[in-house]
Amino acid sequence: MKTLIKAHPIPGIGLLLLLIFLCVQTASAQNCDKVRIDYVIRDSKGHIIDASTLKPSDFVEEKADKYERSTKQISFSGTGDVKNAATITSLHYENRDACTFKLDELTLRLGGKTMHLIFNLSLDSLSDSAHSRKVIDSLPFKQGTFRLEATSENKIPASSWKKLSDEP
Image (spheres, rainbow, N blue to C red):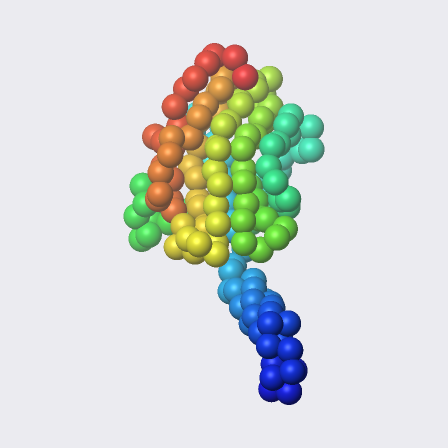
């Protein structure tokens, strides 16, 4: 490398900078965790629904970037009290490319009612790993459109949902 830099200093330095840049990019790409969102679903009376019982026909529409949807058992307390937490099965979203994830909207149909949810969440585990895993509680299931109010909390209570319309 020294010979290349002495013989041709500008291309040699350019090559050296390129190698440094590639090494830094490779190292930073390995330092981010997957972004995860767990959504707790409730029936019309406010009781938690086991998300694994949902049928494909219950999902009317999903708007998200590069996601995988599954169900996952999590420890959850609607009051946030860890001592009273129970194991439930949530609707689990995870990104396919490890660092970023955007969940825009979800529309579910249960018991003849359609609930349109606007999450508008954009998470980045590389720049903000402390806020890259969210557990979101839901309102009792009802007809209408609801928007999640902006919050930096990782455990988001049902009170963060605001009704926009009676129509989905």
